[in-house]
Amino acid sequence: MAEETANANSNEERIHKGIAVSPGTAIGAALVVVDDTLDVPERNIAEDEVVAEIQRFHRALAKTREQLKLLQQNLSDSVKEKHAGIFDAHVLMTQDKMVIDEVENSIRTERENAESVFFRVVGKYIDALASMDDKYFNERAADFRDVATRVVRNMSRSKGRRFDRLPGQRIIVAYELTPSDTASLDRDNTLALTTEVGSRTSHSAIMARAMEIPAVVGIKFKELDIKNGDVVIVDGYKGFLIANPAPETLENYAKRESREEAFHDELRKESRLRPETIDRFRVQLAANIELPQDVALAKRYGAGGVGLFRTEYLYVNRRQPPGIEEQFDIYRGIVEDLDGYPLIVRTYDLGGDKLAMSLTGGVAKIDPNPFLGCRAIRLHLDFPELLCTQLKAILKASAYGDVKVMFPMITSMDEVGQLTALVDMTKKELEAEKEPFNKDIEVGIMIETPSAALIADKLAERVDFFSVGTNDLVQYALAVDRNNERVAHLYQPAHPSILKLVQHAVNAAISNGIWVSICGEMAGDPRYIPLLVGMGAHELSMNPSSIGPARRLVRRLNTHDAYVILEQAMQASNGDEVLDLVEGMLYEIAPDIMNMILLGE
Ligand code: PEP
Ligand code: MG
Image (tube, rainbow, N blue to C red; front, side, top):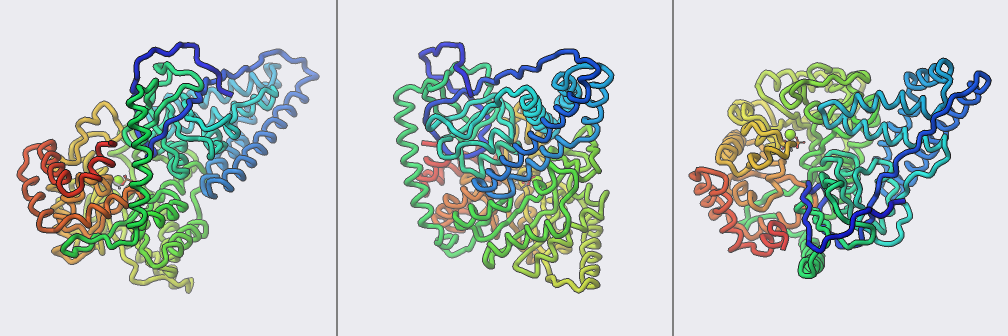
């Protein structure tokens, strides 16, 4: 298990800043995971040892598969089924014919032991993936390394690291947590986790959110000066790991923890209150989900439906894309769980920073500028048969509840024409197959490019609803990569240009009589909610845990004041002025939300 770090503690409180990927705060003893370097023995073998060596290699692969399956089962029990899919990809790696053939040949020709040959062969693939300038492939390199480490350990009988029985309640501090590490976590005793490697879309982050464990990534491991047992604080709102916290910081966070609990308890009690303003303007509060099991969380927070189901995660980490029946079961399961509330299924938004080998027959092509490359509907139109598989599954699920379909990354009318033609074609096929589906299924689009926002009045004539994706809208309008921490200070949703684009889209929807939702991160941020309500958005769709504060805030607003603040914000010359205005209003009407959610106090 983890060992103690060599350095002694200095007496100063040290705040290490990373990226918050799973909300919540925790105070507790650190478990510093020092990466135990893998010992790969090297030796020459005699000719008559070759067969035995190859058999030993295969036994290790089989044992690895068994372990992975066991992990998968345990995970299914503890975290629900679909996370377990990650391990299908891992099991597949142990069956990779190219790697196995190369290892066997090298054992025969080079007469070296299986561990060293295997490690060298796999190392080539890992290095190639790790050196790519693409987060998705870097994360796959980590997956490969994880599996390779297990295989080598199984050959050398050395023990791997384990997190399933922690010595007590701990905050795990690691350079990297592999999916098998995260899956084997002792949930009852894991208070929080921090890693250097990872992003919001890395498996560990996804799992941490599903387990509701606060998590921060991007914490530079080598810069830490903490040892096992040191008390640390993890702030999953602000992205902090606080080492050697001063007594008053500890006291503040301890108070914050109990205030936070009380605050969330209160908010949960309000989950059945109508999300409407003082003057009775109803704002639907819906959830953004990434995995089917997030629906339970959405319901717990009182979501009025799913405003955005990001289906990309159904496609990654596997060689074959999910088929119609697999997808149908998932969509049907979700909409049935929603008890009459709507489910908006967004067709897979792959490309950009999320690539799926399953879409390109195992060969993932990387665009030189992925966010401006073959992403989302551009991939759909390149591989229409894959889109039609998804559309068929969505349409079939529409017979079981209020299911809508939504296309991401629209930039032109022409694209809408091509996509709706594919929807019509799929409907005809289902009719011919005599499959029941909702013939009037609503088809909507995301407004997340400046071009779509600017031609929203035309687009509104062709579709049933809009959902404004401000995460991408901000990156494309301000020319700021949403994942690049070096330009993070330029990523400003409050920039007046963004407000103008959003307002333009909302106005176009309202004047054409269609539904408009906002589903980017802005929708769940209390600083933008008054502006979005002032614009007249029908729905705000957000991370489930943001729904409670959003409901309370909506109920403290009245549309006139929201409109007035919006008008003032529209006259501002920069984002800071906009924020000053809204924060001034929030201090007056919602100091509790301001303190708890925005200031973290
Ligand atoms: C958005 O762009 O605002 C959005 C909601 O989609 P995603 O974050 O999945 O790109
Ligand atoms: Mg988007």
